[in-house]
Amino acid sequence: MSSKTPKTVAVLLGGPSAERDVSLSSGRECAAALRTAGFDVVEIDAGADLPDQLKAAKPDVVFNGLHGRWCEDGVVQGLLEWMRIPYTHSGVMASAIAMDKQKTKEIYHAAGLPFVASVLANKDEIEASHVMEPPYVVKPFNEGSSVGVYIVTERANGTPTLAPDLPETLMVETYAPGRELTTAVMNDRALTVTDIITDGWYDYAAKYETGGSRHVIPADIPQDIFDACMDYAQRAHDALGCRGMSRTDFRWDETRGVDGIILLETNTQPGMTPTSLAPEQAAHCGISFPDLMTWMVEDASCDR
Image 1 (cartoon, rainbow, N blue to C red):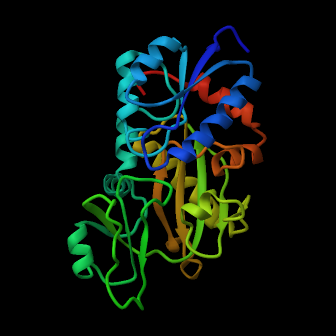
Image 2: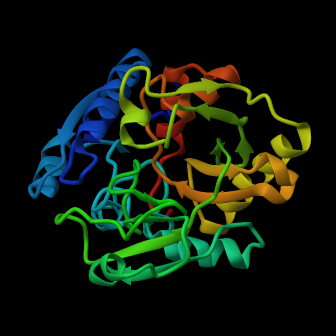
């Protein structure tokens, strides 16, 4: 470890979002890897007393292992800026925009990146009538991990019955058929493309349950599709103002060639277990999990 490398790292994990369990798993793996890399690590389950916990820990750097609302949407980032504690991943503005899927599409549009049409609608409207022609997808516009996703097919007899705990305003998005691809970016370096294979929709269970999905890395796809995903992921990272590591997810309709690629979203704090998609891509590129964690800590800063 160099003399400039921070010695004490506070790993934020858990938190109050719907993705708490994912964050606990991810954060513990990150903490273990950072200890392996030689850092002094304190794990902090982020709650309402987070400022007091940070004051007590006195970390050189915060590794943000949180996921979901209040955690990767600029809120925690703003607190860390206020406290002037260097932190990993994207800053306030990029985090807030990327977590809002509708605003992300505005950035994609300005950057000339492909995406599908969507509207924001009230739950009552969505349950009362089709707000767009099926097939379409209903989902929160500011959650991750496929939380609260409904697919309305062309054969659907009616509108979806939505869970009562979903927010009042939801995104209704044209369904994009095809394969699920993803590319991670480390600042100015797109890593590779992974083909995510599941038996059905790539939902929360497929993402996190054992055997829920299979990752083909690098993706066995035509070179022009591979190159386009790498280019689009880097451009999305840059256009949104991301820092550190991000991951952009795609759907690819094989029948349409390059025109069949659309961007689904850009994740500013992708899952961080050793077998998660982004670390898996780093490993494929010869970057071990402890080395990846070290890079992220050394990349940390305020004013991101």
